[in-house]
Amino acid sequence: MEAHNAPMSSFDKVIDRTNTSSTKWDRYSGRDILPFWVADMDFEAPDFILQAVRERLAHGVLGYTQPPQALNDGFLAWLKRTYLWSVDQSSLVWLPGVVPGLNLAARALAKPGGSILLPAPVYHPFLGLSKNSGQRAQCVPLVRDSSSGQWVMDFDALEHYVDDTTTMIAICNPQNPTGRVYTRQELTELADFCVRHDLVVLSDEIHCELILDRESRHIPIASLNPEIANRSITLYAATKTYNIAGLSCAVAVIPNPAIRRRFEAADSGLLSGIGPLSFAASQAAYLDTSPWLERLLTYLRNNHAAVLKAAGSRMNPVQATYLAWIDVSDLRLTNPASYFEEHGLGLSLGAQFGQDGHIRLNFGCPISLLEAGLARLERALEH
Ligand SMILES: Cc1ncc(COP(=O)(O)O)c(C=O)c1O
Figure 1 (cartoon, rainbow, N blue to C red):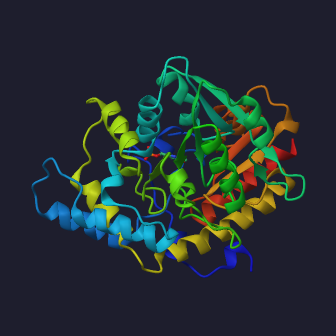
Figure 2: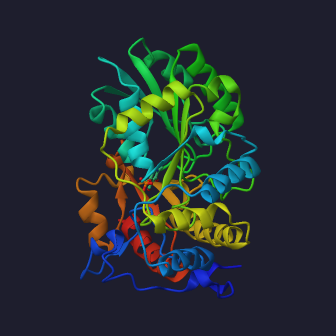
């Protein structure tokens, strides 16, 4: 069935986000440019989350707040139920965001003259980790697998670049921007690599629930075996899945107490606490067992099919996330931002992720909006 013939769903509702100081929409305010860049969706958060926030708000006192026990319990139960990974509550460090967690981890493990391995292209804050922690970045390009065409880790290159300055490897899984979900085999090989070279693995798994490909399953790398768990920092948040990125809340899972102490010490007063409304929203998210998420995934799969049709062989099918990574290198654009803006599209540019000649398109929006954007994209790609 064509996407636009699908029955009305709550995800079809177009909500005007202008005049809400939305990061995504304000960038192009007053211009005929549709925003498909930053990774938040244009959908309402589910009612059970909004209701939890309303209930907390109704109390009226919004003081400094600790992570509620029900949130800890809910998160640990979710991790066990969804990924068969049991961890102790003492392994958890709650954070006001995944990006602060990435930076704390890089600082915590930094050593003079140290370096970080970064499979890339990758979500742009990864590319700032080395500078922010006074280390060197060693980007290791992901490569296209000759049979599947998918972006995979290049283990020969990793072996080539690792040396005794390397402190950690930082991965994003599911991968932003390529949409890859690393397989058990890839993760096992990576875990062995970390053990062999005495590295910590820093794994950003914020997109783990947004699996679109029915053949793919998310596996937390740290859940593979106790050896890799003991040298891991894994970051989660409910904010992408439930579209509550403005209610900043994330959590680091760090089973090794020595690494955890260094991680906590790296904060040294830089981070703010997490607000009670953010805790309430995340708690409701981790307790969710309703059909909402499955409905969201069905909608995103339909949107994905529309993007795939418009972009054709320029993109690989996205295994997870609501982000399409589209090859536009043949257009040889000197100023891709203005080129796509002239075609009425606000996109993320490949260079930001360490791979020029690509654009990243966020398809987490009502299909009517997406179709308007894809018509513009097709015109842009024709030239
Ligand atoms: C891979 C990845 N990590 C982290 C973030 C942001 O996380 P936070 O808002 O919790 O810092 C994003 C947002 O797009 C992301 O795609």
